Length: 154
Ligand code: SF4
Image (cartoon, rainbow, N blue to C red):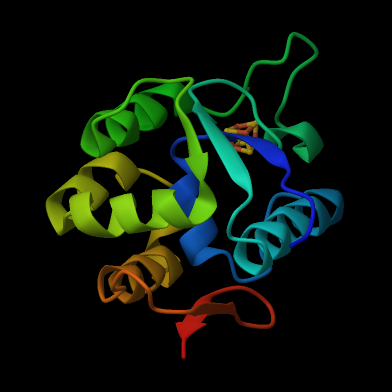
């Protein structure tokens, strides 16, 4: 087994990562998010600590200001809604795979629509598609990353 990393992740980025298809705010942002995506989906025992502040994805984002705050809306509101849907508080850690199982079990369509309302990426449909696929996940299913983002089970 490889080394288990600890990643700090905004709770709502759990959802964004289901819809990641190689798009983002800048080339550096995309490169970083692709690396995080690859790490999480290929090493599913990676520990992930959920937060409602800046994270490993924000670290390469052009919208992160010098105080470490997001200059693009109030992502904490989305984070808090996802934490609530998952039934946990900020600071909880678990494996990536365990978070996926919990998300699949607890994030219903109405919550997704509420959390993601107003997001610039929503209309592309990738997140809805990725979360739809996630809901078919059953405990013990293997989960493989697709090139360019997304997941399949086999
Ligand atoms: S800084 Fe804001 S826009 Fe950039 S990844 Fe973080 S939450 Fe998203």
